[in-house]
Length: 250
Image (cartoon, rainbow, N blue to C red; front, top):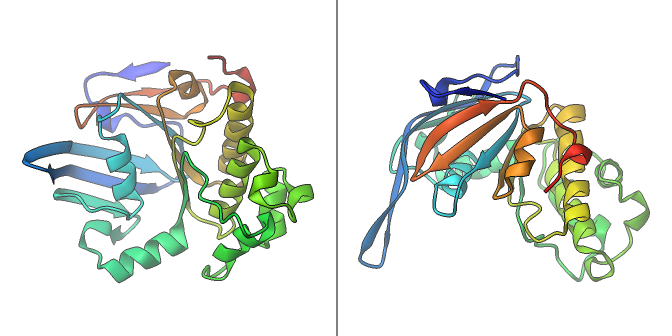
């Protein structure tokens, strides 16, 4: 693994594609009671199409805030965030809604499935609002759940529910898959299965993947690892050799 300490935010990974995200002097502060909290400080960052990025850092380092801004769920206090040619920081709420709907898939630590709907129905909810979705069964086959389409969430394990959530995120063919602690509620073996699915989506569909984790071992499967601390990108490491999820240990 190679480290660029001089210009951490400029370190480029192995991706050959165009820039998909460019952040410039990104900052975020917010009020919590009587306290002003600084979540991000002057973040400069470029992420390239097709990259697999892992964000590492302690709680409160700014990882989720950065992911939420890139995903159009939050706006910075200052600075600029671009998706391709679109300036997310200048976008209206309607434009951000369209951006999220057309370009971004989200996966969170908790699965947020609707318990009264089957696996297929949970995924089909997204196809109703997407412009060019893949068939729900195709998305479920990609995550290894073609045989469980008529089951309800309560009939699935935690790892299977998380894979349904990933199928729901990718069924609209997003350009970007943003994952916030996707293995945080899972055991070791199940977590590795979920990481395998995310890696396959990144490799086979060319979907840019950005994964937040507290688990430093997951860094081995990334193209680049961004270490955040105190709202800043402290350093960026480039993996010359990416590990498969099956090779990870923790």
